[in-house]
Image 1 (cartoon, one colour):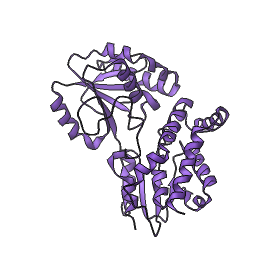
Image 2: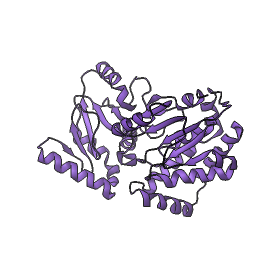
Image 3: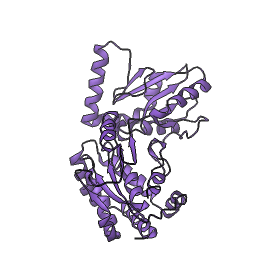
Length: 336
């Protein structure tokens, strides 16, 4: 199968995603939600549309032009996917197949419906993919592996798969920097960065750095449109649980009615909690963020910082926005 044929199949997937009827969406999305109550119609639809937006000839050509992708002897690539947000493993999925290798995927039970649907569509477009895509329970007979999980699961991955060429991802989080000059549109975008997928992704902003005159009450008021997240019972359970914990510990926190704010230097906030930290000097803050880079997936804000994303863009990664800043395609392209 030629590269052009592999690309064409995924371009057709993009068209399929963009043309799903309401009935098709309801059937597919409801099956996915039955496996994972976090997968709401809106969040699945958002994820699928972001992928469709990237599955264009122009964007794929721009992505792939830096790689030769002329694999003479395909390897079996093990893939362990997470299930925290819809189709979170798609970038690895498409990278393995476009590189020309064979996919041996152990899917998360939380997101197997959508991933198997993707496979079904591209196999219909290019039947040769049927021999390239394998969904397995055990990763035997692999030549390399890409695995995504927590800090705990990464130790398991390294123990069992460390002998293979690998990309093993651990916990990461994202932060935003506010200067106090943000407008309503930027606040709307920041709400997207914080609350999309209920804050479950590593690209979700879990902490904000704020100027000294920061007013939490005013900040909470400007994010009011996102209070709909509390209609999800799993999210609401986390909100009330963390609220109870903070009350018992007598920790000072700000209450938004659907999320809590806690001032701390910590990075990883619990679900339904947004951490904040005040800064005096933006230059010193940039240095601090630089020292935390191995724990960060995204930095959001209108600041002069390498790779900083505009507000509202954290959940809209392009092909070259590799997880953990590790070039997956380069890794795959070098396997011979």
